Length: 319
Image (tube, rainbow, N blue to C red; front, side):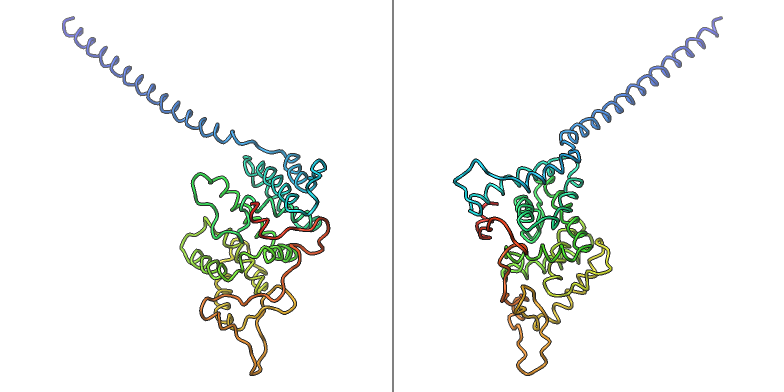
């Protein structure tokens, strides 16, 4: 009995220690799981703070932008700067619903699809809303980069992607949008243009510039169209435009001296004149810019009807 008792006591304490260890391990595991769950719930709670828009709500955003009128504001004659300021405000507020939602891609997909479906006046309202949120890359070198605007940056890149895909499928949509770009006159200004295409070149030469890819792809598509090289936009996947940009870039530097403003349109074309009076764009040697346009569109979009637009400068001051 004297030998068995110590053995039993030793066995008892061993079992107790094992139980304590197992219990402690279980508690720690539960604590870790609970902490992980709490963190996940916090993230989900943050995500849930953004409202998911229904299909009907998304459609209503565009309906409100397209049809808004101001019957109670008699001091704002249609086509005045004040009239367009009110249109711009409505566009900003309505598009904000999509931008702040938890499903901005779905909302922007529908919104992008509406471009060119109605008349010029509707497209102007469409574009003013886009411009107030800086979704058009012909207005800025880069999308937002500040941490406080991460949601808006996300929306900028989604919008750019959707527009590039639309342009590659619909040359008519590209022509229509391009007219507004020329009318607003920012991307192809001599002070801006060489900076834009230089920026695209540097970004597309980087090993991983994919965070800005769609933004610069949008700008590139406009440049290709402006210089008469729409052939580079055929039979190409939207995600694979970098080689096409390099091809255009090489062509541009070889032919920039021979590019001229078309006398009848707001495009640039290569001068095919082989005579001795061949006119060269000598300024290209200094700044790689395009010569000034000889013709500009009278309206942002063709077949304009409805209230007259105000000046590009007035729109820019509203944004």
